[in-house]
Structure formats: C-alpha cells, structure tokens
Image 1 (cartoon, rainbow, N blue to C red):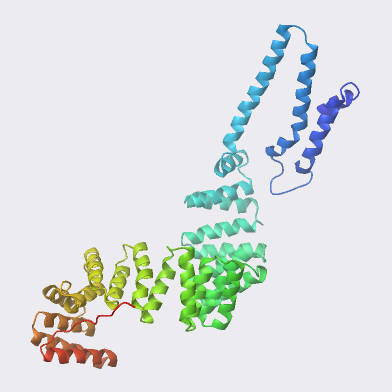
Image 2: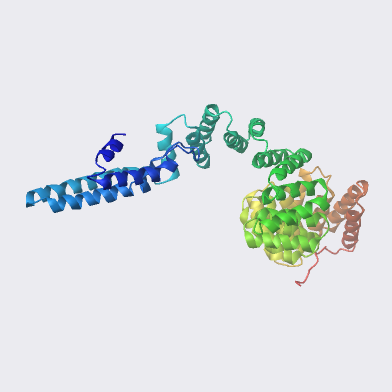
Length: 459
C-alpha cells in the first residue's frame, strides 16, 4: 500500500515508478491467491517474473544517478552500494537454491514452515515411502488426512503404504474411505483388485477392476489386470480382447504381453503364447516369470533345446533358488546335454544337499547317462538310497532310480528287486505310464543290461 501511494505521488515527476509497480502487480495478480490455482495459496517463485519491471526500474535509476552525480567519491559510493545490493541478492539466491535443489529439500522446508499443510505432509510422505522410511511416511500421510479429512488421495497413498508392508486389512479400509470421498477413483479400485487377487479372491478382484475400468476405460494397466483375472477364471473369450486392447493402448506394457501369453497358453494357442513371451524378453530380458513360462511351455511341447535359453535366464536371475537350478539341469538331460546337466545338478546339490528333486535328478543322471564321463554308479547308489530313505521306500521314482544305479554297478539282483518294488507302487497308484516304463527297464536288468537315457540330437 505504501508503494502504491508513493507511485501515485510520483506519477508526474517519475512515471517510471508507477509503470514498473503496475507491471509487477499485473504479472503477479493471476498467481497472488486472488484467483486460486493448485493446492498452494501463494508461492515465492511466483515473484520471479513479476520483479523484472522493478529490476529494469532499478537499473534505470542507477543510470540516472550516475549521470547526475559528480565527483569520483560519490560515484564510488554508488558503485559500492550497487555491488552490496547485488551481493545481498546473491546470498539470498544461494539460500533459495538450497531449498530448490531437490524435492526432498523443498518439501522438508515447506513442512518446517507449515507443519499442518496437508499438501506438504502428503508429498513428503511420498518421498519417505520411496526411501523405505515407512513409519515416517505413515505418520505424514496420517497427519495429512487428519488435517484434510476429505483428501481421497491421502487415504489412497496411506493405503498403498500399508499394503506394501503387509497390513492388507488396514489398506482395504483406507482404500474404501478414499472411494467414499471420491467414488470415481480408478486407481483405488485397481489397488483393491490387486489385494483381492493376492488373496485368491478372483471374483472380487474382477469386480474391483471392472469398477476401475468404468472410470478409466483406457487405462492399460487396469485392462491388463482384469484380463489376467478373467484368464484365471477361465473366461478367455473376455480376457483376450481386453489384453489385446491394453497392448494396443500401451504397446510396450510388459505385463500385458505376459498376461496375454498366459491367456493364449490357456487357450491352447502355443505359438501365439510364445510370441508374447518373446516380446517380453525384448522388453525386459530379466523378466523371470515370462522366461519361466516360455521355457515350461517349450518343454511341454517337447522342444527341449529351445527351452534351454529362457530357463538359463531364469537360473541366472535366481542363483540361490535350488529348484530353479534343478529344473534347468533336468531340461539339459531332456535335451541330451548331459555334461552340462551334470555340472548344474552337482552345483545345486552342493548348494542344498537335502533337496530331494536335485538328489533324484543327479542320481538318475549318474546312473544312466549315455556319456561315460558323466556316469558315477557308486555315487548314484548313495544318492538314490538317500532318496529312498527320505521317502520311506514308498516313492516309485526313487526306487526306479535306485534300480538303475544298482544296474550301473553290475548289481543286477539288487536292480531287479528295487525295480519290482517300484513297479508294485506304481501299479497300486494306478500310474500305468510309469509302470510300463519301469517294466521295460526291469526286462533290461533281467537281461543283465544297464539302462541308458536316450540321446536326442539337436534340431
């Protein structure tokens, strides 16, 4: 107000003062809070552009004074004063730069100035959650919704945090509160769908995703998730078009390609499924689920050599998972890559000596490999005996492998005994296919001939 009065008094003698002040007010007016824009009332950054007129006025004033002043001393004082003002502004700018150096510094500053700002609490909570400081994030989100009880996004963010630490019931309650405030909140429906999907409640998950789709019909993530649930529910005729639509909207959405691959696989369309799994590998070679699905599908199709590459990726991504390493070794056996299978299974057995599937696979390989350097009859007997003890001599596969191991050590009497025991268990279980295979091997042992795994040539 004082500056306005001064500008009015000097309007005739110094019209530049009024012009500069008026330009400042006009540029500042739209962001001054008179017209509300965004969650903040005002912000210091809004003055940056507006002060250009004042800076021009100050510069003009300095030029005017320079022309009127006479004498070296006076001009020196003017230069010193100008430099002092510039230095002061530089220090103030440096202080502001610390505030604006990143989002964390900014929102910490705002939170210090206005600890009850719901906007500052929410945004600082987001940053704390990203940093893994969940307790602080929960406190900040909680304060945000207490200050602003109708803040749907605050309840949503709090719910997402609670879900991430396994507090699903509390998360559901907060998502539902967000939806009471804003029933057209698609992200909240989608997150509820994710929770129910984790719980195995597919029908409720589908309902949540459909509600989310109602308010965000072109959201590719919601379409992909809904398609995934419908695939699991067996309604492939609905799932596949939704997944194709999601990919049409977001061609690089990996999860949509993966879900579509699963849908095609469930529909018995193996080549279409493999196409989607390959697309996943192009988008992210380290996506383990799609690599495993691709490898497993190729194995089921008998394309063992093709299955090796995706399953090697899975093994590389999960080096501490013994079952994953064992699966790769087993596929190497199916592909007749016996030396590689031996290395993989031996390493897996060393990693976990008590893992039964690894014991069985390694014993079988050492008993019946067609490669002489891979076979190790005595160790195969030891491993197969261990497997039989672990299964109380009630597992047909363990006994079958023990028979092959005894045959490799030329103990055909023990091989015949173990094979007959395995055959009896398979027949009682009604497993005709396994019984026929054991019976064929039994005939070999009766003829004093060891069993050998088949050798498959690479295509």
